[in-house]
Length: 203
Image 1 (cartoon, rainbow, N blue to C red):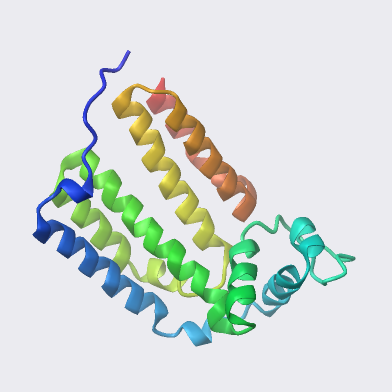
Image 2: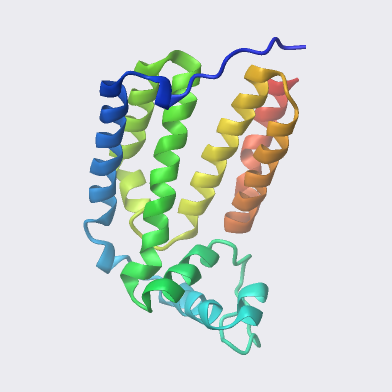
């Protein structure tokens, strides 16, 4: 049995470390949102997200049209946040892309938590800054695409897996599995690529 250890938490860190992390998140948010209104050429999936925002039936089946007569060519979990954005703010490229910005912020915080627990506040800040400043990261979370939800789900799953390893408890593994399932909804079997590594590291 792995001995239980206290988990490092950001709110217990010095004020300057928390302020630095907040600055990283704010800077990343600005970068990801810079061209939010020009989110990219995803008109097919934008139309599906709009239909899903107008009909519970279409949302449940991941349908392209509100009548749910034509479904998407893949699992539609990635479009659920986009449908919520449209429902809240109306149909626009910005409202479709906004959920990806939120997913990016969560991913940065997940990297910060993982780094803090692994190597202390310095590693946590470096991990957050590295994620926030990577060009592909900024581009991916500023566009309406399924990769954002996949990346966020796997980052959060890794944080819960780490908690299970550090505390010797099994229930965080269930939460990690849940988020891997969310990743599967976003981009199907791409979410399973992390499983062999996690299984080996857990054994």
